[in-house]
Length: 124
Image 1 (cartoon, rainbow, N blue to C red):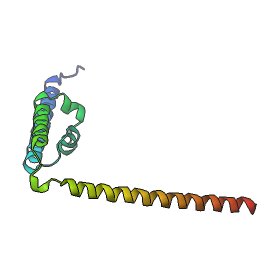
Image 2: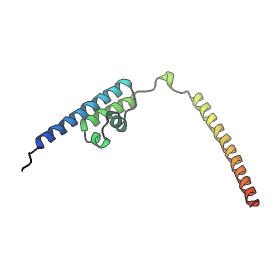
Image 3: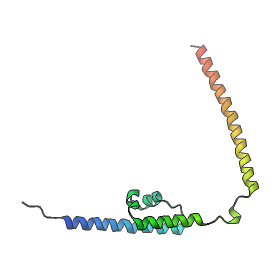
Image 4: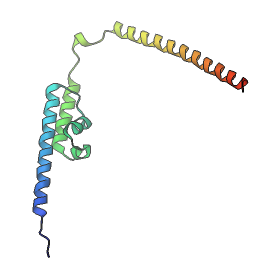
């Protein structure tokens, strides 16, 4: 009994799967471009249900992703949305105050732990 050569069907199925993955990935890229969402190879791969390694092997799709990412990074922040120097300074001052508060709290908690451990050692 000889086996039938099924190569042509396997090749056809692989091509159909690749074409479907390509179409779906293009749709995902277009949707990300339309919505202005974050664009990366990982995001596109996850959203399209393809592997990142497959995506890196598709130069046209990779070029589309890179173009979209470059276009998003080239868009300047509107003046109304930019932080003023004063507001940035205030946020920095608030962060510094919070860091100092947390350092003091951390030191107090360390001291409490040390005291508790010392008391436990005495009662053994």
